[in-house]
Length: 520
Image (cartoon, one colour):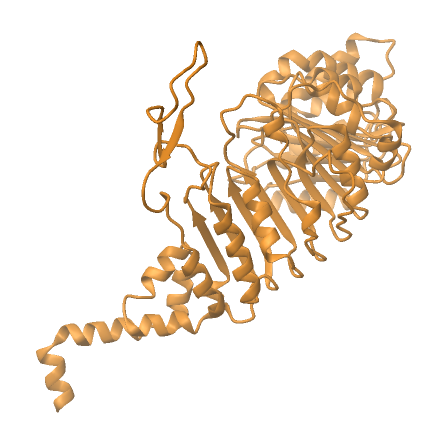
């Protein structure tokens, strides 16, 4: 009776009781999608929620550290003012020397140092994913170093499998790693420089992410992505830092020496992505033959952010030799404004017997607009591809057709959008002395099955496999047996058509009739 009376007199307690008695799994599912600060705030709503959060280690695997504390060498307006009143009187024409007077009290800025150290134990022995966002450029590096030391003392550095760091000063990352020293579980490292100091020189852009003198142990490191940060200092060749487990690197090269340093430090590297959009004063340097031979052992090389200034630099240094069996892929991804003229002229250079030619349109350009992709594959396996903005197609259509007519005569597989089939075929018709490619496999994207049949007999008499991809991906195409049979008869002139594949076509009774006719 007392319980009933309590429920009637204080209904809000009954309501809160029901809300807190929802399954703990529900609260955990909600908290998993929250930033760290929101998880901490929600866990303090009531004792019941706090108990759930404290006893759910998976909620605390992602640690998000931030700091906006200014360093002792910062001379911004928040830290103090420039004053020349205490300076000595000028003698003759000597300039007056200004003195920076710091404001009293601690430096400006905030951080969650104590919170991170407090939350480390909540994840028990689970792997940790660490995120760091540090600014401004002259930040408090001692705080970052202390963070690394404390994470190591708490045993957290032994469990960190991923580090994502955003900073203005690359020294922040070096201080964090130098403080932890030992990172046996670290597999992925992503470092991004958010801004640069107001000094228009190339030297400030060559800040590297690692100090050889730190001797940081990262035996499990698999992938590194560096944005706006150099690989390692080209002036410290005495360092012996090696990363035997590293297989993937994304970075920019400011000097040719950096390429050799990376290749020597990463013997197991199988993927290299070069950022050609990073600030660089000139693209005139070329790699030595010895370095090029070391580079050939990397199976996949990709250069991103290619411009008209860096196009020749990217091709000469990183294309590689197709005669080397280890090189399986080379790609150039152009910036939105760049036209791939040299890329199309050199894509088949030293590439024997091109067996695959693919030209596609999709929404994957560097700025998210409509992108164009050209891909070639030789009989020996090497794959070369260009990715550029589709708005430049008119400017390079002549080069594309020339590439198709003259350098791809041995192709066996062809991939084209339906709208561009007539462009390539008519070009071949106009040049009777040109030996046209005769693929035995044709894949057509955005196909209009009602009108494409007229091209198949005259253009590709040796087709054995035809693969149509629907232009409409939301609804299946409804085609009658007559249209499909016309396709078969048009494609099957002198050579037997072994297979016809049509995606996104609705299967109804007429398709069953077609299948019977094919089998007979």
